[in-house]
Length: 118
Length: 115
Picture 1: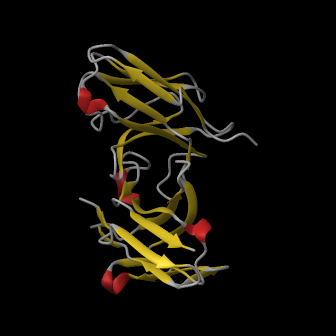
Picture 2 (picture 1 turned 90 degrees about the vertical axis):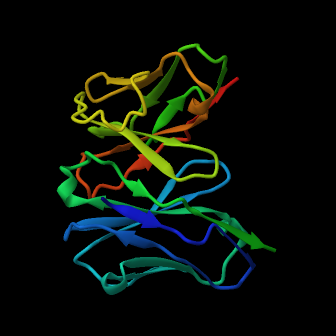
């Protein structure tokens, strides 16, 4: 069965520091999709990125970057020059193509609470 | 356009009562999902609909939980004879269709507190 592990429960850094959130996943499927979501204090989950298992290119979007490594089953998320507004809980999630479409929903990690101190 | 809308935002009820939670997906989204998030935990998948069909109900925690969807529109999650362990935030999400590569767009959730 699929599993997503976010070992870091909480991270606290000072504004402008770089921070990396770890995500390790387990799946027996060869085709799968990985997602990152942000949950700010207001509570609504915001979709950040999707990556499919055949695309190991790293991606950069502004201060955000993602490092996907199949060899280590990891999909880590780095925020460069962090800002107070980045404070939130970040979730990594996995969806397997063999699950029959949306049958199993997304499998979420337990989230990492990121605190950016001014 | 409008996002996923959930109501009520908060619900406090006594143990043993029935509750009904509502979700309005993004217009045009055929797939709809329900999740439960307990305090400090990740999201637990409950059920999904493709159109008004729910192919797999095995994720529902017990037979006190049921869900319905009208066409490709509103869905309701009903919890009968609520227990204190049902206290959680119930999140609804929708996507264009139910494929595994589809990003799901979430509502603000309903915070359910069972006294």
